[in-house]
Amino acid sequence: MNIYTLARLATIEPEIVEGDPSQIERSATSGRVFYALEQALKGKLPSMFFKTLMKYGVLEDFFLELAQKSEEERKNIFCFIDRVSIGEGGDPVLPFVALCYYLSMKEIFMLCERISVPSRWFIAATVAKRFIPDLKKFPTMKDEESRNLFILVRQYFPEEMEGLLSIGLLSGEIDQKIANLILREYENFKRKLSTDLCSFSSG
Image 1 (cartoon, rainbow, N blue to C red):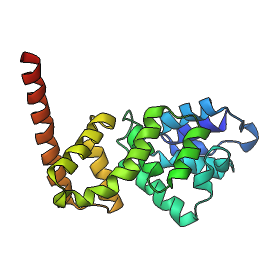
Image 2: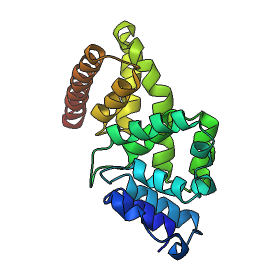
Image 3: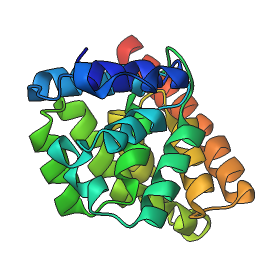
């Protein structure tokens, strides 16, 4: 069995990691790695994908940025991914954003290029990296600033505002009060946008 397949399966059944090392194939293409990652991020415990790669000494092959983190930093990142994950069958983009959140922009770029992620994933990770820290400023933003922020979210995360807010909450960037305010104002923004579009179409 290939190590990336084993790591993917470990996100569903963690005990499967106890395979025979001599029977594990360790080489893989970037396409195979990305497919395994995509499926792993839909699993119950996405962090097991990376922990399994660590156990077999291949994490640095495609996830060098994680391998270079300290043990404590990796532990925090893995915990963060699991908390953000929606669970089996969920959208893998948000856990990927969580994975990238504590990486630098350069590290995100290198990781995305190495495993050939789709442009949507790369854009989501980089936009969230810039967007989430700005959320704490929302209560003092001018109308135009908040509107531009919502336009950005709607463009890249049309159905994922709650997921982004959960990343903001779990990372400590915002508190629940700000999250509730943003969610309420975002719903108002979408309603107004829908009304404006209807008016424009009927006109």
